[in-house]
Image (cartoon, rainbow, N blue to C red; front, side):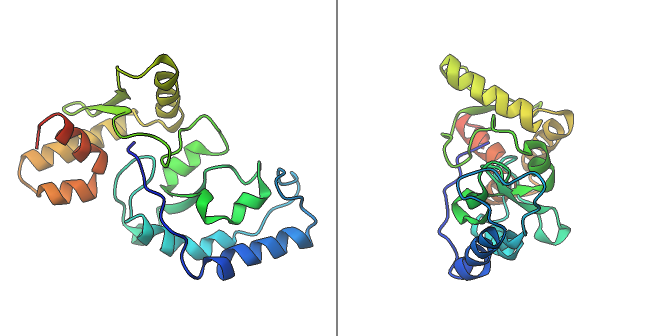
Length: 199
């Protein structure tokens, strides 16, 4: 993972998502700042902003830190604070993270995942050749545990993700694409290769 800069709310968001969501919560007598009652399924008005979310964050999954094509249908709106825990945040742009479907599914409603908006670059390190991701050894024990918990929860160090990261760097080394393309395709790999003087 790398730090993600929060992007401004799109002009149409309030009308297309927030106001519709607030009206729905009021109709259902759902108390703001509280969890959504178990038996109530809230309306997914946030889907109306997925194209804006994708373009605002340049198609990069906030957790996996790789570019994905919107046409694949693999993108989703992750509610960083889960809908089940804060009904009022279900329709707030500031609570949305662009995520590939796999990462959104693995994060689910858990709250032991670091916020991409809050982490600092360099908290996650990469073993370039193997693709292994691990906490920066210089972090204090508390930060180290938070980073490791995030890696574990999201499966960031599973075999497929290791292979993907290693392949991205290897293809760059084979000159299949440029520094600029590596940075766009796999920004975490790019950042770690730059940190290690491997570009």
